[in-house]
Length: 145
Image (cartoon, rainbow, N blue to C red; front, side, top):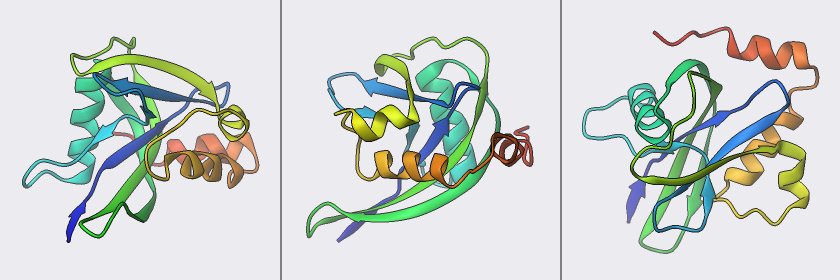
C-alpha cells in the first residue's frame, strides 16, 4: 500500500472566506497545495505550491492538523493541513484553471465537492475558532520567511 501525503493550505480572508482552486482537467475544487518533492519539507512544499498555483507568496501560516483517508486498498492519504494568509494579487498558475473565495458556512450547505476530507477540515477549522481575535492570532504566531 502506498501512502500519499498532500500538504494543503486553508487560505482565508477577513470575511471568513476560504480560497478554493480547480486544477486543469479536473472539475473538483480543492485547497491549494501539493505533494512534497523528494527531500522537500512540508513547509517548503506549501510555499512552492502556493507560489506555483496562485503566483503569490505565503504571508504567514501555522500547522493545523493531519488526517488519514483510505481511498482504496492500494492508496492511503495522510493530508497535512496548514492555515494562513497570502501576500500579493492572485494570478492563476499554469496548472490551475479557476479559483474562488467561498464563505466557510456555505461549504456546509452547498454542494461544492472537495477532495478527500478537505470540506470537513475547513468547517472544523472555523468551528474550532470561537472568536475572530483568536482566529487571527492563530495566524500571526508564525510568519513565513
